[in-house]
Length: 220
Image (cartoon, rainbow, N blue to C red; front, side, top):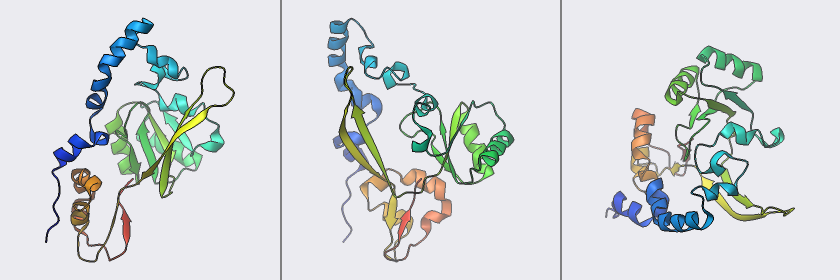
């Protein structure tokens, strides 16, 4: 018997994590108007992060933020203005001893937009063209998990507090020896949201049948 699957639009409607940014923030608009009137500033909230442009609300530069973090806590990182040729970027990677794969991302951008794992010089050239602005190239850190940590500290305090830790897993499927990657993705809600992207990225590879018990990482 085929398992029932809820339509994606209903899942989006009932799970705010899938909402577009404006739908998420729209309910806060009345409260923002109230606080803006109270503080006499429409951008009052930017005071929360004085080390970032616009308080990190939008348009913040990743390179400006990364330069405030000690190098020993960062993956190897190179910054580019976006005007360099592909050959110049490749030479910089060579001089830095930074091999493929690397992660290439726009200096300004949100929610993973145009962040790609790049495996070859041809992919690097395509990614630079796609970004069309300042960008960052980073060492690919091959670890199974990623954690997001929210830390806050009030002015005058010597120590702050960690208010949340979020575990982030990468998209993967586990084979059953019969189903293709496409079919396995259709069985998982989160994976279904990425189907179109993966079909374009993997091409015919999405029809591969994975052996039973084998877990295949699909991103980054």
